Image 1 (cartoon, rainbow, N blue to C red):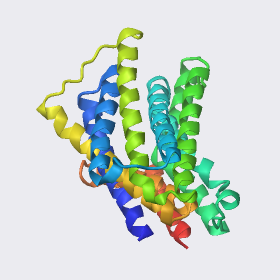
Image 2 (cartoon, rainbow, N blue to C red):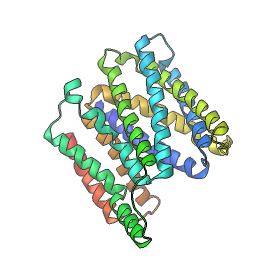
Image 3 (cartoon, helix red, strand yellow):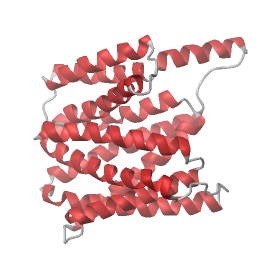
Amino acid sequence: MGALFLTVCVLDGLVLACVQNKISKDSIRTMSDNAVYEALVFGIGAVVMGAFGGVRVCSPYTVHLGVVLGILIILEGVFAVNALRIGSMSLSTMISMCSLVIPIIPAKWLWGEELTWQRITGIVLMIISMGLILNLITEFTEKKKNAELEKVEYGVSRKWAFFAFMSFLAGGVMGFNQKKLTTCGLSGEIMPYLFYGFVTASLLGAVLYFYYKNREGEGLTLQLNRKNMVYIIPSGIAMALLHIATMKAIELLPMSLLLPISNGGRLILVTVIDMWLFKQKLSVEQLIGITVGITSIVLLSL
């Protein structure tokens, strides 16, 4: 059953990534747009959670964990978007995805999860795979060469480093938060936990919209017409199903198996789909990354 939920995580995450990529390129141009999109997606997701039994009496601790989840979701998103806006897309994405190591490293001592050498090797290979697929080596080589030609200093800004690190930290703490619910005898309250998390994230998204509009001067350009709602509504449903499947998988599988395969497997599939459906030519670096990623998944499954 754990493998089934893990498969759903990867496939649903793939669908969500494709939908988000489409609307991001077509309609989201400002931080206000992004905030409204997040508010709507998590609002729709909260409705889905409510339909699945999220609106019911539960432990105050579940409500607390759910509210913290919603805060972490928004923080991770805000920091990640800001890192992408001012720095390397590949490196920002890579650092964000590597947040999986935060809950994995202490899992053996906190939750008694088995962490074999095969899994440690698999985790390292998956991180290497993600870096290769994101073309980190090529990107840094080209940027360094251009900097040398233009006789300017090449490096990363402190502001970008702050946003990237905070995105990494928020994503990792989120994994702790999710695991905490399943290890303190509250696994039966997953739906209320996610409901309160999504409601909190939706409300914070609305707050961010007014902040970006009034303090940063970034107006709303995202139109809530039929064309965009065709993407926004499926995004909310897919987001809800992704979190449900993730929580079920966390309950049944060790973090050292779930997180690398879920994150890395999704990236591998997105890359392969770009090649097959959209005829995007892959670099040698990316092809090696896919091969290393598949090897990693095999090792993690042992």
